[in-house]
Image (cartoon, rainbow, N blue to C red; front, top):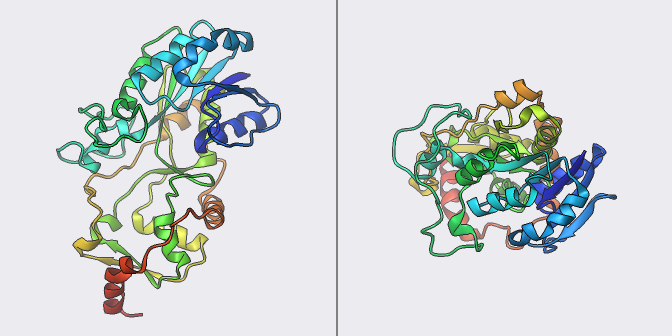
Length: 336
C-alpha cells in the first residue's frame, strides 16, 4: 500500500509513519521540515506547507497513493485543501479528529452549559453546539487557532464521496514523544519523592478515556489498510476508562513510588472541571467492525512512558516549593 501522511514528524504522526513502515508500506511524509525527526529507512519526505498543498498535485499523482492520512487537519479550510489536492489521485483518506467534538467534552470544560450527557460516549452522541471554541481567545498559538474546529473538518471530509474518509476521534494520547507530558503533573511529584499526592474528592472519581501512542498508531494503520472503514467514524481509546485515583496508582506502580493518595474536600485542589461530566468513550465500533485490538497492554505502556518522561524532562518541569505548601498542610493533617 502506498500512503502519504500529512504531518508525520511529531508525536502521533511519527508513530503512524513508523507503524506503516514496519508493516511494509510505501510511505511518503508531507511536512514543513520544522520538526527534527528521524524517519524510518525508505520513507520519502516531501517538504512544503499545507497551505500550498494543491501545488504538489503532480508530485502526489506520480506517487499514486492508495490512502492519504491527514494528521493535522485543524480547520475547514485544511480539510477542503486535502480534498482538492488528492481527489482523483488517492482512493481514500483517514482523518484524525478529537473527542473534543462531543457536547460532553464542552460540558466538562465549561464551554457549554447543561446537565451531563450520558456515558459512555458513542459515535452517535451529541456534538458541541458552539463552534470554534478558541475564536474568542486573546492569544492564539497558531495562525489557524481561531478557526480550529474538528467538527467542520469531519463534515467536509465525510461529505465528499469522491475521496471517501475514515474519521478517527482520539482521546488523551500519552507515551514516548508526548510533547504535552500528560503524566508529568503526577510523575513530577513522584520524582520529587513526595509522600502523598492530593486529589480533590470530585476529581478523584472522575473518568477519562486515554490511549497509548502505539495503540493509537495501530488503530490508524488498521483504518488505512481496511477498506471497510471508508465513510465511518470511530472512537479510539482504551477499553477501560480509569478513575483519576486509578490513573495515579498506575503511574505510581510504573515509577516504583511508595507514597499514598490523599482524597480531600478542599477547593484549593479543585481543577475547575465539571467532574459530573465523565469523558468515558465507547470504543466498541472500531473493534467490532474492523477488528481493532490494542497491541500494547497498560502495564507495558506505563513503564515505557514513565521511562521516557524521566529521560526527557522539560526545562522547568519541577514543582516550585511554594506550590507544595497547601499539599504539606494536608499531609501533616493526615499523618504518615
